[in-house]
Length: 279
Image (cartoon, rainbow, N blue to C red; front, side, top):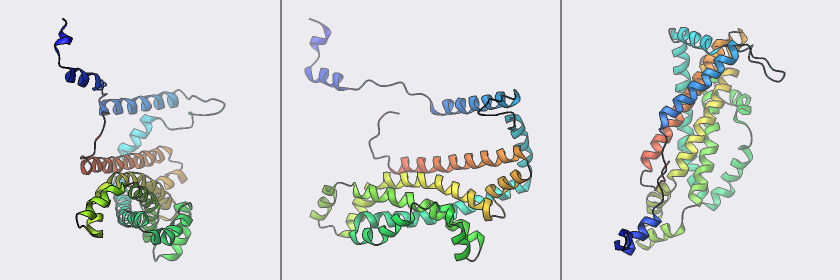
């Protein structure tokens, strides 16, 4: 008689059904290593003046030149003023987009009348690139500052509204039926079923929306801005200050990464009651 024969049958079944645990790679060391490797390749290609028939690196500034220019920029008040101005614009526009997008998504997912009226207008305007609306915003709004905030809000609104709409429509009807059988009305269904059940879709839309918002904000700053990271990046290009151009590009990338990471972290905290597999 073996040791396995002495184990209860239920325990054997649990052991057989238990999935094998996978080795989990540490997140931040891997991310840092990938970024360091990319910077190393960039430095090597530019300092060695690699030029092929289909791509050239000899015209780009090296990573060390960009790092030196960044060190010069952060010692000036101009850099931080541009950074603050862009953050104010993205914060204002994204807050408007989040509030309006979530409300619109819930309405579109719950109301047939809203889908036929407001939803029709959304689907007509949504394919238009937000940056193409810059001339309209300049004509419509009293200042270029308001126009840039409006462009940012418009860009983020559509992915948020569409994601929330799909999340609301995907909710099981049995959840709503359960609340109504207990005497709950429309507000109870909204508060106890629709809002918590659609949270994964809400944060998915917010994550996509903030990335699109950064793209359109920077483009708007390049076109009609007076301050901001996008404006300074374009000005550096016109002055043929290519290391400063890369400083602006990398600043935008880092800001976009950090804002998306904050939203993802908030989403994980708010939806920690959802089951998740090992990653």
